[in-house]
Image (tube, rainbow, N blue to C red; front, top):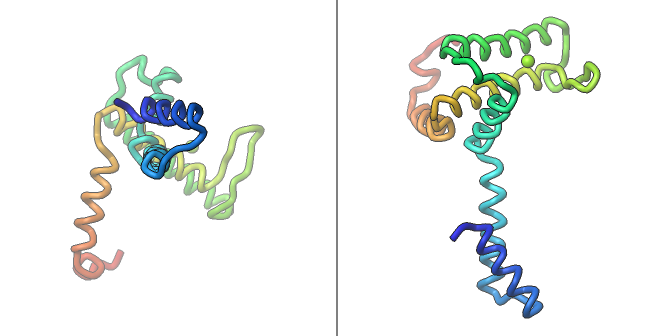
Length: 147
Ligand SMILES: [Mg+2]
């Protein structure tokens, strides 16, 4: 049984009786919390980004991994170009309806990464968690590196 079905049953009980008991109310809160967390995960963004790319026709022809990496680089270059044009780090401006600026170009980079991971079946969130766990064990400045 999925969460939607459980929610539906709880809503039916509430409508019929006019109230939910403590356990049912807790279950409803837990479902709401679970749904909220699901919508904030990187996996969810990955699915959205990849589905949008499919919908917009970006997978009608085969794409190479090299092409996808180059497109990620291009978004970072656009962020650098915004900086070179003296745009603020948090500044978002509009060209017509299109949002622009450093935050938007960084977002584009993440969107490209999410799309690529979605396409290749990479669990980006799991990879991030694994690498962050490892990073926490590394020595100060990774053994004294300057940068
Ligand atoms: Mg861009």
